[in-house]
Length: 426
Length: 126
Ligand SMILES: Cc1cc2nc3c(=O)[nH]c(=O)nc-3n(C[C@H](O)[C@H](O)[C@H](O)COP(=O)(O)OP(=O)(O)OC[C@H]3O[C@@H](n4cnc5c(N)ncnc54)[C@H](O)[C@@H]3O)c2cc1C
Image (cartoon, rainbow over all chains, first blue to last red; front, side, top):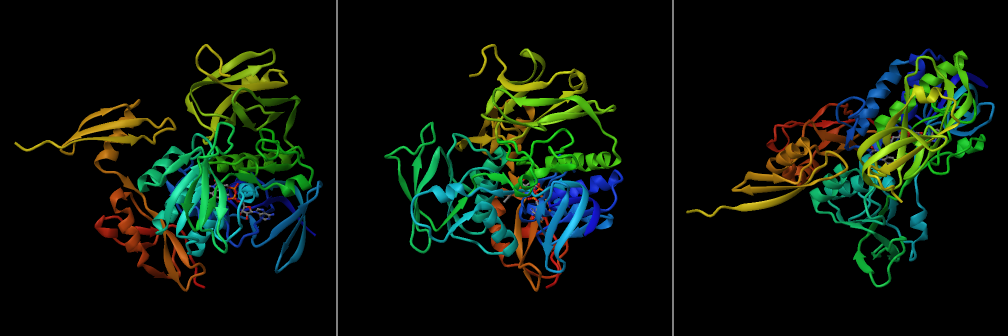
């Protein structure tokens, strides 16, 4: 058995930034475990530009963003084991991993950072009626084939889902010479960044069909067509609106799920909405000394926020190991109110003398313009409001909880996003 | 007297999620009126996007004898949007030998744009 002060699972941007932040704050004997051959996680296949605008104040591609952290890691004392898969973590922080050279490894950690990222949802692909021919991929695996393995998975493409990965892949397939017939979106709006809607679809004349879905897949060996239908308000296909579209490839881009098998295996409670662990302001899970950051905690659209979150976790590991923390008498719970899907962190659990405020992240359920973010204390009293001209489910909303509010002995703060007019939104 | 060519274009602003549909009216290629924007940044974006829309082009180039068969690349600066597809045809003809390192120039002055195509990652020899 090997001993380490800190073991980090996953070397994507979250794991890399957490390792560097922990070291910077004095943590020694850090071990980073990565199942892939390369460091950088999903960023290595995201070759498009648009990363780092917040963190580096310049526009980088995914691999360039990863490179900056990998260079720093190489110069650090952090020990790395790649091509090493973590298979279990016990409640008392015994990590079991496997790789070809060591076989089975048992590592006892004092602190753990979970940074396993997320995987793509595939349920929709399974539920659609029809045959199961070749030519059906998730957008992320198509991204890997094209950008890392150098082959185009098809020539006539339909994409289901207009989140950023779907939009980015529409342009990528188009540039590589495929014909992208349409991007379908079941909702009345795209959850992708507007910039991607314009630069990935409009630039190339790719149609975005809102409130449409695939209702049948046809083809014997290979996909040869799909039936698409319009959906009603409850997202059910409307009979009579069917259209047959000729295609040989379908890309599914219908959402990401945090990869939390290891977390639940060690008894960590997940938030039903985020799919990630419930954490306090230090990004610490319900288990003391076990932290989570990046896409394993909540699905991020901006890697800059992943890095920011990982730096909070990395620094928190240092404070934990030094035994420097003071618990609040009562945990402050942050509760989602009107039009708020979730808030991260979900709790404030510690006192901190030099703290001025805590940055919170939320996602709204529905797009809305001219709104207030209301912080509501016990007794339905609004204690602070922020204005926003626009909020959408596709873009994470950030705001601050001032120390003055944290210092009060309230048990909870509810956060609501309300229309900025007198009538309340339904 | 020559006839004036009057044109009306819609430009979706990407400055924020609001996505204003800015209307650009032009006469003989010069902007005569901008409307439907809600901030100065949007107005400027629409002007630029009308006169000379540009984009960074990220893609891949074939690698021989490398650990991976392709290396990711990008134009070091934005190039005219109208040149994206023809640049892709040009880039499809390039093959580089491993090792390739991040920042390395893959093609100088791509398509006469004055902009270099550079590697955005490192690919070691096989
Ligand atoms: C398919 C896909 C495409 C994306 N495309 C974009 C995009 O185009 N633009 C954008 O802004 N964002 C994109 N994202 C979001 C992007 O993932 C985040 O911005 C960021 O990369 C998340 O960082 P992370 O470190 O949390 O996760 P990741 O980058 O996913 O890293 C997690 C790492 O953990 C490793 N790991 C997982 N489980 C284990 C285990 N049991 N043992 C050892 N190692 C393990 C994985 O191999 C991986 O390297 C994409 C996400 C996905 C899933």
